[in-house]
Amino acid sequence: MAILPIITVPDPVLRKVAAPIERVDDALRRLMNDMLLTMYDAPGIGLAAPQVGISRRLIVMDPSRDEDPKEPLIMVNPRIIVRGDELRLHEEGCLSIPDVTAEVERPARTKVSFLDREGKPAETELEGIWSTIVQHEIDHLNGVLFIDYLSRLKRDMIVKKLTKTRRADQAL
Ligand code: NI
Image 1 (cartoon, rainbow, N blue to C red):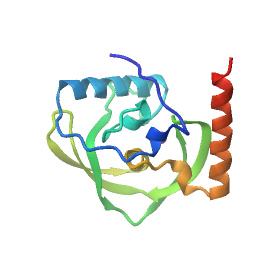
Image 2 (cartoon, protein in one colour):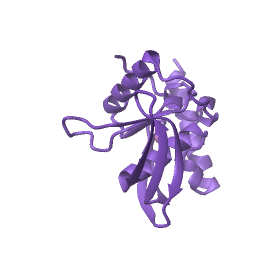
Image 3 (cartoon, protein in one colour):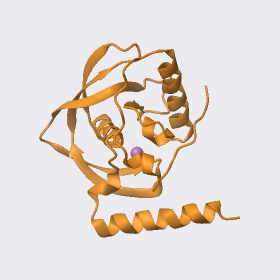
Image 4 (tube, rainbow, N blue to C red):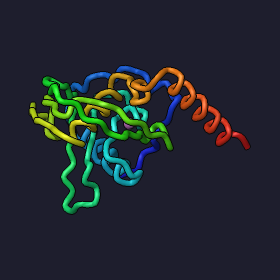
């Protein structure tokens, strides 16, 4: 297993629509394991494949990261099939947008269909923090970032600041 490098804004991969996964095989399960390790190491509570530079529809999540044994959710080709009416406000952050958090409102309950680790079709109902995370991660598969829900002015300021930081990091 390997910890993968996490890409950050404004990397263009984060803005691409990720391609569906056609086969769940050992190579994909290795990527699942690497993504989980990367997420726990960061530390983060969710990670989408585009964040490690792989534009494919795969996400991993675990909001209870201190618990043992760990019970992460891994979803291939996830799709939200039901969004509840009730909304939930959460102060979101993103491993691809370092040092930025903002409140985002999303449905408090969702029903998601996906393929599991073995490639079997599954459905699950999520609520609370799980519902927030699954929507944030599926957004990543569609090239959408949580800062897109903020005002344009605020978003532009964040991207500009991160672009400058990145240039400074690369300068010798
Ligand atoms: Ni994110």
